[in-house]
Length: 414
Image 1 (spheres, one colour):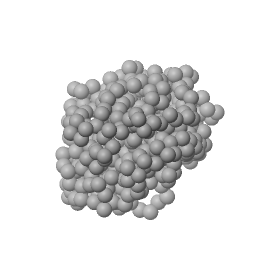
Image 2 (cartoon, one colour; image 1 turned 180 degrees about the vertical axis):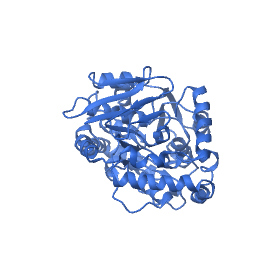
Image 3 (tube, rainbow, N blue to C red; image 1 turned 60 degrees about the vertical axis):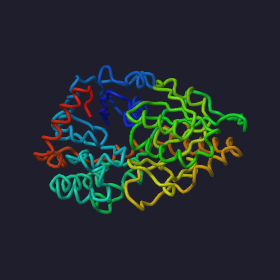
Image 4 (cartoon, rainbow, N blue to C red; image 1 turned 180 degrees about the horizontal axis):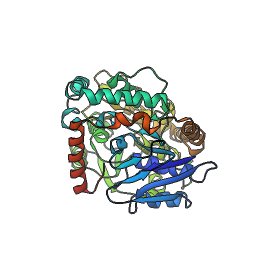
């Protein structure tokens, strides 16, 4: 089976790591002939080469353009809009679109970023009124993809939100949960926790709106623990100043670690007592036996009643947090932060071990491999089936050209 994984990137985000991990996992496996498509100076190249030196890497030029004549192409859902222009395909090529964020299916619509985020309760209506043709085409695109195992969701909350937004038909979804690399550092098995030192809580990932807003909302509700906690931020982003102001305002100690290379990340994470986050960040810590506390994301400030958390091992399989979009949205997480924080003092070792076992059962490469290969072999989403649906409306074409023009100035293709 010929497989091409398309992943040109300028900055390494969660989706890029997922596709890189998938590449390392599949490359060299019996019956799979794999090409990994990246920029020659892309941030995932070194990581993929270290993970599997036998990977066949196909380098693309600065514009990301490539022609793929045969086989199956795996790419994130956001790159669907590149097909036909940046990515050209043979008619017999099969496609697997991996939706790694609830917003990905909605960002396909033009004008999304202008006002949709600020109008959460009305976004369905706004999309229907402003881009009815593109919205209808995207709905059909999803439904054909789901019937053909070509639309793949990261988790249930990802599917549920898009199903709500597009009123999707009831079709059994295909899920590929997040996948992490195997640990390179020894798993933590012992803890030395003292009431006389601060608990080091690490936030791992990009310092951006929907990931940081919930943390800023949390701080004023836990000032009782300001002398007991020190926050450490691994990553960078546009919300660093907002976060610094909030830490200072509410009296918390903090440290911005900055970027940590992938090959050093395991060793860095072992310095911390708790990892607080969502998505791949809590899996990167769970595989090391570190207590991993799952939180939700949000683009807008959350009230105390909506600030809920849970240890990873108590979450349903394939659930690692969700983005809160709607008022009164059902919340899978149910525990208050202070309850879990107090529990940590008494049960830190057992919590860490339970998080590790949860990762091993649901997110390790061994658990992931058989499912992915089966789904790829059963995929029947041929390019000719959906080619008309990928042809953009005039307004979509204009908006995307403007986006690419602005992105090229910043050195990005997304």
